[in-house]
Image 1 (cartoon, rainbow, N blue to C red):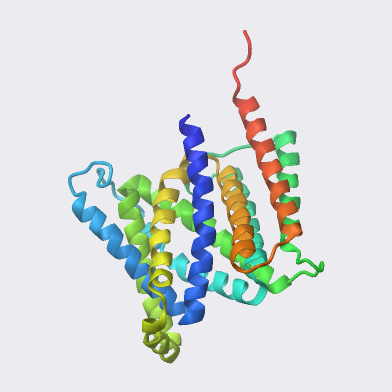
Image 2: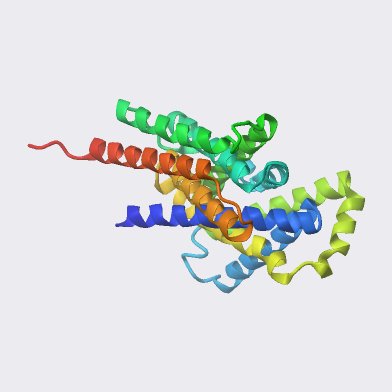
Length: 305
């Protein structure tokens, strides 16, 4: 029952990520990507700081903290690279292709993490059934990465894959940090280091554009301005709880399926576009994920006496 809850929360997180990425990109288009990142991180940092303050005596919010490796305090730096990769991929290829390439990166690197035991993840082996199921999922992802006319946006696909790899890495590092400090504290530190990195990066390299973007804020709808930060809090906290509870490859496949299906829904409802190619790819990926879960369940089943 608990495992099913973790799987559902992981899928829900994938849906939220899809909405969040589109919201962040639209906010970036209305201002600049730097403004989008800075505002979102300020919102997230404020919410999580308030939670820690109000729940000071709550053991769930403020559990006993243990010393953690120093590099985990800087995990939020990944966010600067991830948001920029997502921004340019979506702007130049569209949300669907961007999401497809990103989830491919998540899935491929999560498999590597499971096989190598990256950052304390439990090492797992592959049997033939799992290999076949993963190949089906990979086929689905590759289908989704192809545009409707059969062309392949190579460089932006690579950028999207990089975003997926960094996203999965950040999730695992943040989840590891949460095991030392608690999910809320780890998430707040994620936003804090990301905010500092964003301020330094954008005001050093694009100061005029960033200041110009802040000048445009009064014209941005309040819902668009706050949605990215609010959704990011949910994503960071939920992944801190869930990622280490289930195999990384299953987590990535659930996140991937949810992101793709939600992006299809967003395209259909808000951008009046629908891709059969992406739908077929998403369904193939779901079939592959189901095969992995069944193979894993059979592998854990006790032998009859």
